[in-house]
Length: 300
Image (cartoon, rainbow, N blue to C red; front, top):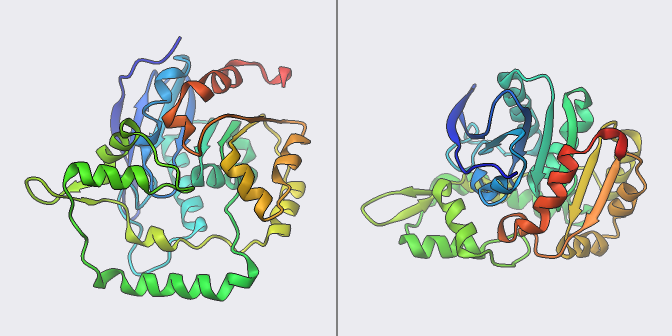
């Protein structure tokens, strides 16, 4: 069975504001906490969740500085560690013993490290087309970090541009990680939480401008692989990846996919489609995810 499209909105209080969340299904069912990618919001899963089993309770969130959630405290970097701390606050607030964790892109990166830090909170881990916070290449360290500093210092000097609704939706559709445009349905789902009305027919983007200068922990590529060896998954994991991500890992000669394939608790499947296949063509991944959700751990 698939889940009805009914959901409820609620807020999670944070020390600096709130996290906006959507819940699908019965709270007494096994919780699946779902996290979007950088610059996206909970709307990226609106097409996928109705195709997943009704026997789970799905919670999608807007990460801090995304969608309808409050910005992280101003005048500082936004880093991967900020999101780890934020996610732990969310987990503690929900007061559920364990979770299935499902993340796309940057959300998958966040959940990977969280799962290694707090494996006792994880029932299963589902990663859609990404893994680990992507490190900054050593030879670009200075350029990247200086650019981030300048972006932060100039945030207050810029004036947000306003757009007509259709133009804004078009920009959302076009501004994707690998340059592959998403369809209008997917873009409009993101627009519901990603746009702010500034007058009768003009909109600005709700995402924090500092997201263009997010600083990841400075792991190099070798360290990233060593960390996986040191902290192997103690829970079932499903890693779905597309050719776009495969090319990225190949470009930097990162053997992450082969390492995951050789991990006892991990199931690795390549799927057809773009980085945003979960929203563009949810049927391509829904049956795989559904099977993984309902199958017994002993069958992995």
